[in-house]
Length: 282
Length: 96
Image (cartoon, rainbow over all chains, first blue to last red; front, side, top):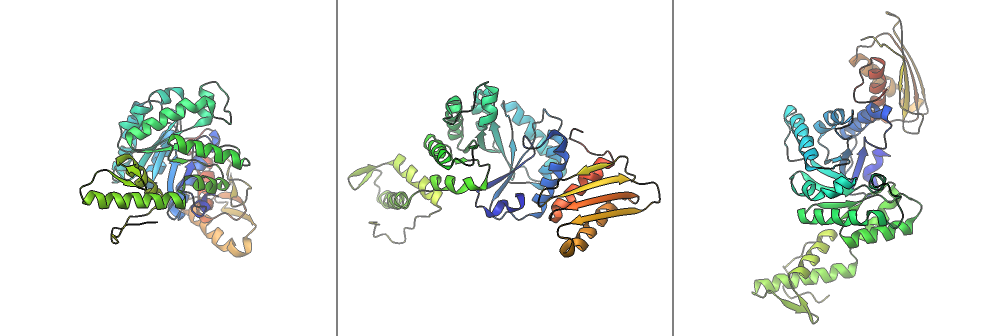
């Protein structure tokens, strides 16, 4: 399935060397992932590699094999402190120096999967320029908390919201945990809608069947896009005329409303054109 | 190089290949057995990949059994490299 990763429409594909790999198959997985990254065209899909934590016997070998390939991102599991990220970056940069590679291309995704990680997530998210996403690992987090993972996500709700707030404060992506039941499409839709509502910018999947459902939740509707386009266009016209606040259909439009509209257009990958300054009455 | 132990890597799953390596006495040469679901189409290419990698590791006396279920070249190379490194006891960063 790895070689088909780019054709399913995912924004990002995660090649795993960590929990999905048996302890006596770490070498095999490392060589397979290395060769796949070298050979397979994943099209526009971002390629991330989840390495093992540096406290395990596998972490260094993973980095030595993967960092020279410069995937889009390294996903670092069970991140608990900023100090761990400092150690990780030091090793990554040493490997990059050895291979004459820049330090700013490959980014880091920090996975928050323990209570300690949740406690320190603001430091983890804000202190390092190379971290451009944080994620929550629901199964590991509930295990660390000695509670059961339930479909309503009650046990990790505080963690989710704290992680979102840390990500928002640092202006980075925040990715929700996987929905483990691939046969429960309604449940996935509900959970994704909730994740979007509280601020997650995306959600992980464990099966290609889940991709479309998540995309449908996150893709703005045509009505939302039309409204956002009109707001942004009117805002630019009014700004050029020196007006900070204006109204559309009797509703006041100010900076926060414009910012939300701009975000919707960014999701829809739409640029506002001012070529037609007659106004847009759609 | 001389293989030290018998080793294997890969699986019987679709799009994968399983390699088994056994050391042979000095000057016994290479004995390669390939079983593949795509032998007629890709057997020649498969044998070329295997020979090149055995050359890279300078392995001359070896018994290699491959059971292929349509693996791509990067998979074949990864599995064979794993099996070779295991047989040479060169594997790092894994538990045996």
